[in-house]
Length: 592
Image (cartoon, rainbow, N blue to C red; front, side):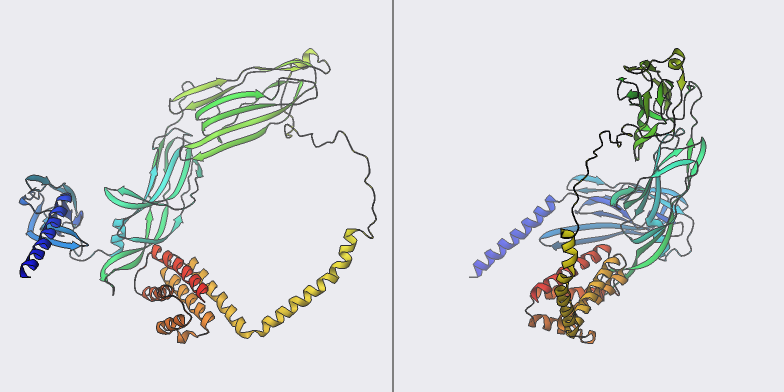
């Protein structure tokens, strides 16, 4: 028997040793430098830890240029098993103090692990003026300053006049703090710019890098600007009042870190744009301020018609650029063609790259005499900032052939006219009926008609419905207990709705949620708030054959409401508790 137990113990030992060796071999070797801070006062101390996940030999520290070693190296080893996975850590620690102000670099350290040499990545340390309390913990405002940044990203800092410039405002938040709310204090006024906001459907949290560190950020505002004058133009800053929670050294009853609330005003700062004027060299005489990359054409809906009929002539500019900030060239037509004021149309979309789409003017033209009339070629000029050159496009000449109608004299045919008062083009006269129907409809008497019978019998049919409604109303008024239950139900829904509106505000949310749970039980079990203990609730739910899962869910919600008075809760936790409250109440309704 003794021999059998020895064999079993030996097998277990070999299995554990094999698992340990396998875990060590499968884990990738890491060797890195960790510092307590990368910015400190000249009278503060710095802790530098060289951490590896395998045991090694021949550790060679850096020379620590610019620092004096106060303590170290001290060595610490940590090894543990968690869920069958072994973790190992070995650390060489140094306590340093800077010798002078400036920017220094802690160089590479090296170590040999299983015959291979591993080195750390150097880290830069900024040493500033002496601080008032070098051994004190930073205040909440100082932590917020280091972990909260509002940035205005500008696409171009040296554009031409009327060239699009996009500005994106991003709020960067370090993972170590929690932002609960923010509100704009002062929206920037974009003087000397034509501006258009690009609306955001929702705020999306994304991961990014700021100043070499991992951050979360959210895009707050996007705007496209078109500078309207040259020179140095300033973009005013966007300012936010941010409510946030920063960690402290204290711990709550459950060991979690306690957060303290503070408010911080952050600003994106002024940005200066150096706007270049449009070149005068090569500027066409008909240039009207168009900047971008465009196509231009003149078209007509028909090129042959009779006198007194109408056609539409359209002048179209399409492409990308400042489509809303220039004038289209005008058509010049002979006096034999009656021309009305053009109808302006635009189909323009705006995104971060600027405006794109088309603008057009549509003329309604009605010839008065037969003959052939040319629509002369017109030109459109624009400046292309990509090629930094002016471009001129000429439209093709169009001939209108009027087949039938009175003949015009030579003076009328050659004269040129300007458009008349504005009318809608195309089908503006189609509402006039050309074939009127003069046949009258057959007359029918009112007495005996369906309308007459409905008006006569309708009140009589409504009497039984009125009596039935009155009886139900009286019965409901006599049901005192039922009225009290209905009032409590309405109150519970009211508080649950209030809790939903208070998402993001921890105190208000959990107070409203607790009141909703109270009133729900009052409605179902006819108990008062003074009788509202967890043991009694569990007893009542058990008597009503409510399952343990629903009971535990309800009790855990109450415990969360109590715990929220002295512990921090995140937005995600509040949303989960609200969803859980809806599911628990639904489950209790089915069980009861």
